[in-house]
Amino acid sequence: MSHEQTAESGSVSSQSEHAIASYKHSHDAPMQQTGVSTPLQRWAASASESQFNALAGAVGGFTSGVVTCPLDVIKTKLQAQGMHRVLQDGRHVGQPRMYNGLIGTASVIWREEGIRGMYRGLGPIVMGYLPTWAVWFTVYNKSKVWMAQYYDNTHLINFWSSIIAGGSSTIVTNPIWVIKTRLMSQSHSPARDHTADYMYPKPGNTPTSRPTLNHPWHYRSTLDAARKMYGSEGLVSFYSGLTPALLGLTHVAVQFPTYEFLKTKFTGQGMGEGHGEAHWFGILTASVLSKILASSATYPHEVIRTRLQTQRRPVAGEQILQGLGVSAANSDKSGSAVDSRRYKGIITTFRTILREEGWRAFYAGLGTNMMRAVPAATVTMLTYESVMRFLHRARLDGQRKLGGYGD
Image (cartoon, rainbow, N blue to C red; front, side, top):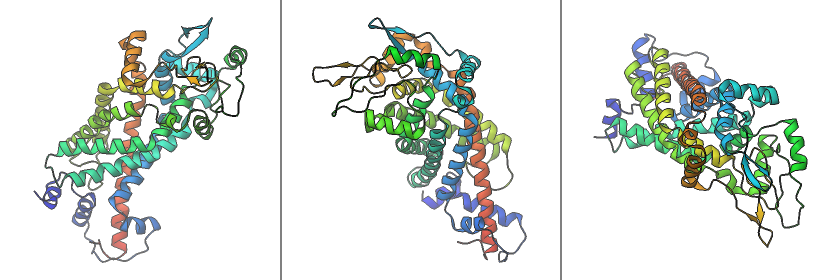
């Protein structure tokens, strides 16, 4: 089957062609019309679908990030707290649980850190969601068009396109998400910080040593975290948890093919198609159901990824830093830090969590995650579909005012 035949059958049909056909059918105005077009209409008239997808995805991701940031902070703290340890009498002991459930965790954060604590990590969320969804939606739709040349099965095309898009966006934006997780997993308490000042002596510096981080509350902003991570741990720290993050491609492989299937069933339109009547209830239902299914099936990998991302790599001469999950660093005879991290790789992390905390730890924060992930996915998709619909309308108006619908 040729690409033109496949597109015409509806598997990966051009969104602009659908919109133009609908517009021609529902408007009696002649094709050749003149009028004053806005800058947006002039841009949209000549813009590609890739540009539309990038812009709509970025706006959708940004909106959902701002709306759901407090829930993301709560979820991250619940996922990460099992790894926290303090040093006492030369041995590791468990830290009493600080966070219990959505309300309990929110109360602790609000009491100790205030509104700023609820939006800890908002900077990297904004920086992360913009490119993440811009890359994802662009690559996803490009991949569907490309794969339609070789396959006829719509579900297979959507599945592999989501894998390709997810891998691309994950590799590009992983450093931002590591910084976000570090910032969100930190805990700030004046009393604990005061205690840490004398519990953990400050190591000396040598000309050959990398900068040490001598205070538990040391990541003060996105740029500050990036600078200190690079200076003390190197470039590799920005790709902590990349492997389990790539395993998380199973999440999008479930979510978006399911979303496309459900949206087509409920509305008769594919993802991003902005012509005809708006079916917002169908889009909302498809978003909620697809996200619940994907989150339930793939949640354990998020806990493993969080543990790997929040754990700092060893720095020469430093003592344990509360809230970062790094055990006391030992040094060999040359003065180099010995890697005493508790979590090393996916398999080791899985076994450690299972042995120390049981299987329930793999679902720590699942309820909160659902309360965060489902609204985030819903806001993202509703915003994306709204922006795509708006851009397609602007394209049609721009082409009409500029003297035709174009080729």
